[in-house]
Image (cartoon, rainbow, N blue to C red):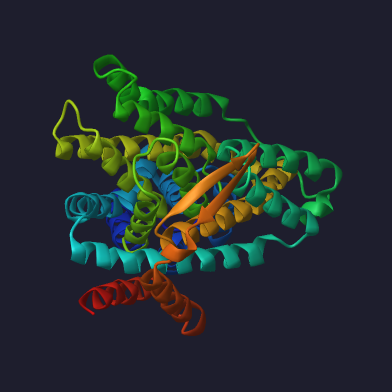
Length: 436
């Protein structure tokens, strides 16, 4: 029972999650493993069963599951106060590092040595995303129906430019239906669904939704009242608020949607800069979704009026972090009392399984999109009715990027090197090519 486990003091909880926030490299898998070792194995603050059950339920929610799991652990031990402390400490160290790197990037990106450095980073990110695609596909696509969902998502994005939210929500709805009539198509076992007994904490849930909904909306209200809905800060807040609702499948799926809208829709940054941002997020602590802070900073820095570029960039980064993570606290505080019920919801599992399969297609689209824009200097688009075709200029193949991407693929798949090491060597390779 959870009560048999030692309850830390609030100071101990604070110090432990500050330590986790500083050491949480390696993406969600590494972050979850770190929390499991620190909180379950070594300190035994949470039981193994409760930890895994909460993790499964966090997979049902939009947003970074590792940060939400940290928030749930804090809530389980000290209510809202503990959840807020754990969730913020998991994010703040990485957010500060990303902010500093975004500021450096904005002023130094035009320098030759900086451009060469990030040529290697982009090539490494291409290999890293390909590795993530293969890993997730191998784990998720275990039935023909799931493979069909992944292929449909890829074609829908790559050829027909379908909106990411439509794909995710459509897949979720289809998964709910299939779970009810053909659960085997999603590798679900019939008869798993059961509702946990006990009181239903509606009051706590509704209060959490009301309070955190207001917190979430607060900066948007301020921007609308002072700068107007035509300002870039409003666009940033509205876009990343929408993103917070549909970000199932992790940072790579998120990046595909950000690339689709921030690059092609809003024109905030270039395709290669998106790869640079992911490279920065890969090498810093905290959730990979912090790459969105990089986007928010550059978007506001480049359209600063009536502020200076630095002030506008700081406000853009702050707005991005606020509307990205305030919803995470809303989901956890509203649903934490229902965790036991969510873990047994058969149709909810079906929706998640379908979304996970769809995300494989989303990441495949991101991989192809990255490959085109990293390896070729110029890529044009041709529309044939509803079909969108990418046409790379083959004569403008960037041989340096291709060479570095091949090196990164060798380091990842043949040498089995870690992400940070691959990024460092690839970035160094870009500098060497500049000198040569």
